Image: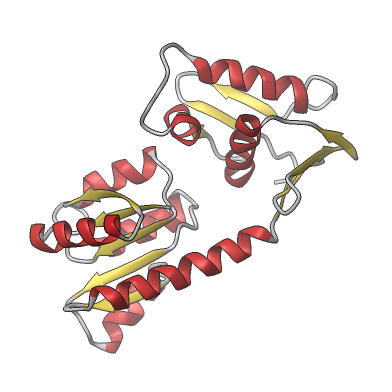
Length: 226
């Protein structure tokens, strides 16, 4: 599981990084709003721990952008020293899933992280993605189109899942590469080869083409029903 921690207090940031890494999570860190937005736009996270008071762009604005502009449902836990009810409500209204007031105990944060991730994993397990007549059952990992079963390799399944989740929006090439290889990117444009194989499976036999290349940016699945 990969978590982004956004906190401008270097002591708190370091403590969170060390503690959550010890618990087995992969941690990225940002100490300002602009860096956080860059990481969110270029990488995929299972959860974001987000301080409200940040230099550059505050946490409320980041969370609102995450929900309204990027249309991402990545769980967010807000961290703040503000403990008034109206402050908490503002955090939830911006799109946060949970709200933790400083100072807090690391064990309480861990319990909240585990509860949110458990809930999101349960939701994902029952999810069936659909774009037009293309369906992906995440329970069975079966892909169908026009009632035909399509056999895909694991890499193609990973790409298709993200493209269907974000359809009809463009998914950046860098994010798709991150999904396949993490930080250990191969030489050359291997992503293009994987997209070619995916397109042959889900598009070539059918009249309506769904997978579109957005040159210089990435790829998207067209949804003609939206």
